Length: 409
Image (tube, rainbow, N blue to C red; front, side, top):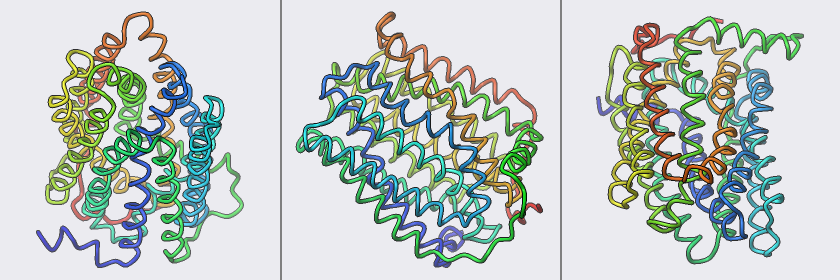
């Protein structure tokens, strides 16, 4: 089992991919802390923080499907090079505004909008790249190992971001993301993959229809995506928009950074589990443990205590990574490779589409009912929808193939 755990490292392309993900993750995980407090430091409110966060997500949603088509047409690692380079430029622009004391809410929103557009191309390409780097029978192990290395790095990001924000300012934390994304782009450019034959002459609309057919024909797929549409909106509004606001008046900024840093610790433990765990119904396991994700949200609203939040955030991280590996592996095993990025695009679009709604509503709702009450309500919504997903028979019946052959086109 030990040899099987580290087997993906025998593949050179996978090793390059891992290093690129590490350097990109270090900067990216420091950004939420930096951006949140940057908005608050220039006089922004909770509602304006939601606007800046939504400015990232809206372009991501608008361009996501097109990003899936591009990632299925072009070499996926080349798409990632371009998107990481653009992310480096946007982070550098935000850092320059903050360090030069010229930052404004509209300016940060514009930068986040461009960054969101870059992510719209990166996410489908990233999710569809793994089957091209490792053999089909190593997908679960490779996804788990990638998560293990990425999450090990992500433990440092939020804490480092919190320290940099508290000592040097938000601008320097965003500069860290610029460097990380730039280095990742250089590394990903070194990957060389065999040419992949794609369908010639098909229009973008035709390829989108093909992806939609693959998506809607699987009940377990669209049910989970529909459920997480609501779950992610509730979580984003409660944890990322109202979380810094509640923390600023209770546990403090540095402590909030520690709470966020505890999540990657849990995710690291979750990947360790998934590197060795083999179950016949992987998707069911992923959905069941995700119920833990509601716990830190509830605790934040009911009684924010640093120790409790750190522990629950870590448990949430375990659940999130178990779910992530289960979900990605299920798609990679059951979706044709030549449509994989498009299906991931529909998955991401459905999962993210309501996030701006949650972020934009969080501030006004907190103004009317109180931030703590809104956070508790969001945690309750998350738990109810996760139970609803588990009640669907097709979700519980999907079986995992330990050594899956590539799904034929």
